[in-house]
Length: 368
Image (cartoon, rainbow, N blue to C red):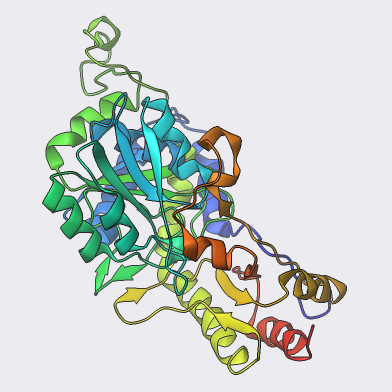
């Protein structure tokens, strides 16, 4: 892409995934079928073990299902980061509950444990953390707070496929972990999601709720006659999506390695440039490297300079309290206040090469 415009994101659909999706269209099962079961089993074996895996139609579906299974209900409070995709927090409203925004850590843009400690109370039904850009949150510290208050930790890992926390895969740790396979994620099934569950006894309930509250394991001829005991949704994954996911899983190590190579090229290329700080990772918090985020002085000037050189950049996510639906701006998130005019996402996706990253860094180094 040396002399072309460098875009922020670009979907990566492996050719094998395209072929498998085409094959599924010629079978009996194009909706939820045996490929969904297979995808769940592979995710369990490679990512979430010992936590069970339940495939759904989107990352938002996975989050809503987690809130249901966590028992979040009318009048409850859920502590959640002020900085995230709105899809983390809007499903809390589906349950009649209230999002309570916690501050973030400037060095990671993940939820601040100290802020959570100040906000948790007897009305808190769950704590939500987000692995921003694929960088795992402080899971041990958050789990300790959750355990103290006897509430679950729900992890939004929609950007963190293959990320690791203290040597363990994200998805194998928290009470509930949600993944997204939306168009531009590291694994895409066009759209789709996965929810992993620490409590295996919730697996059957999760699978009922994702399909209208109906037990699909019941005899096919009679399943619609069986009683429905809880409100269900149309949250299932299709075999077309599952087939794509299975093929993407086969090359996930190579995909992650490529993202890591680009991420490290940014780390090195941006080192020592005045006015810009790279948001990196460490051995305990091993990112999937889905995003490359920097904190920059005079952000709009840098965005303009990059655009003039054919390089796209943007904020991507915003503080959720800027939206009317969440009730207005909060006053207890000073870290978010300090960095909201500084963070910027630079291009990183499968079709970029290290030479592209060097070009971007050279433009930044020339000043803005």
